[in-house]
Image (cartoon, rainbow, N blue to C red; front, side, top):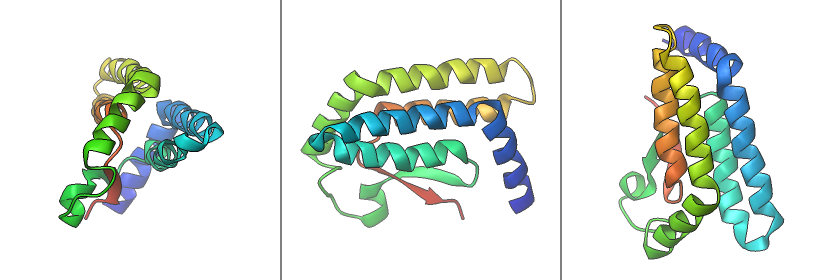
Length: 135
């Protein structure tokens, strides 16, 4: 399975993962410019890394992972997700959707399109989520 993940990740990186990973990192840099955007920027870099190499990783709610609420999974996290959605989330989701449609054109691109759809959903509300390795 590790070899297959590596092959898929390399193909992903070449066929669109690089572009969307850079888009996530650009959003992270823009968030770091303002002091209050640093938590958003940190999340952008984590998700951007997942966007570069998504196969073998998945996003999960921190509430489900730890079994308790924290700052990002409560009311402040919801407010942060609303702000995120308005400033960056919608644009990153559109980018992932465009890439997904391009991938769905070919049969070989279907797994890549599915990954783009997962990342599009994550880009809408990333606060309170974390990236973990699949077992």
